[in-house]
Amino acid sequence: MSPSDALAQFKSYIQLEKNYSEHTVREYESDLLYFFGFLQSEGINNLHDVEYIHARLYVTKLYDESLSRTSISRKISAIRSFFKFCNREFGLKEEAFRSLYHPKKEERLPHFFYEEELQQIFQATEGEDHMSLRNRAILELLYATGIRVSELTSLEEFDIDKQLGILRVMGKGRKERYVPFGQFAQDALEHFMDEARPKLMKQSKHNFVFTNMRGQPLTPRGVRYILSDLVKKASLHTKIYPHMLRHTFATHLLNNGADLRTVQELLGHSHLSSTQVYTHVTKEHLRKTYMNAHPRA
Image 1 (cartoon, rainbow, N blue to C red):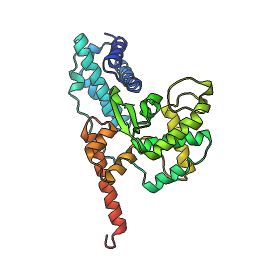
Image 2 (spheres, helix red, strand yellow):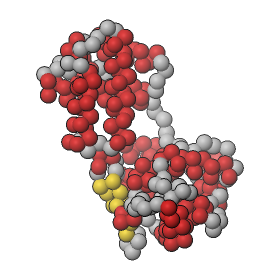
Image 3 (tube, rainbow, N blue to C red):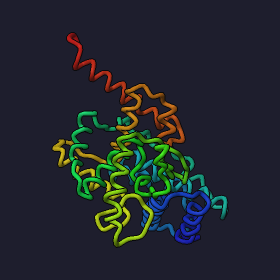
Image 4 (cartoon, rainbow, N blue to C red):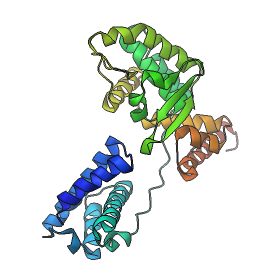
């Protein structure tokens, strides 16, 4: 069986039956093509010839390339899913990767903004021009809801209930959830949609809420650029990545008394363990506050 034929059928399966997002499908394809390249370099052209020793050699190669443990774990998961599919559909042996252990994840705490830092970034969006109104709406909504950037750029007009202050969000694995947002986000969103968006949309026709300055749908890369530019304007000596606002949303909620289950539901996490990392962040926040504030610390 040729790897390319099996990959084409696997892609159809995860797109149509598993409802994986385009981004996830691209990642799976990229991971598998990289693995196929390794097999070719080992002189293996048939998937039936893959053994446990090849799996071990491949993982060793990934470590030699200094990839993070998270990246290696993701690649193993993609290959396992592929072999499981091929086992069910074509009787391919799947033991080679099933026997591998996932590398232990690095214990890294999520980075987040303190409220003072966030206020400086909000100040960088001040202005009544189209760009400022759009950027403020993006920042307010990301912080108010904790949604992922891919979820933000996928938002359409009918996903927003302005009366109830609720977003309908399509998350990972095409899972739908509803997320509330507050008055600050509502005001910024309405201001953008009433004043700036109609003028930006003169040359375009689509239902996506956020656009670039030419009226085309905004991309996740575009949002990353916008946020980096705001951090520069705010003169903060830090790097920003979009997930920092998601981390900030969760951390601030927990610091102010929200329970873990509620935060899990708002973030759209399938497992509570994914949300529990934020309890470590809040404990670290308490420790730093204590060390800075107590006279005998």
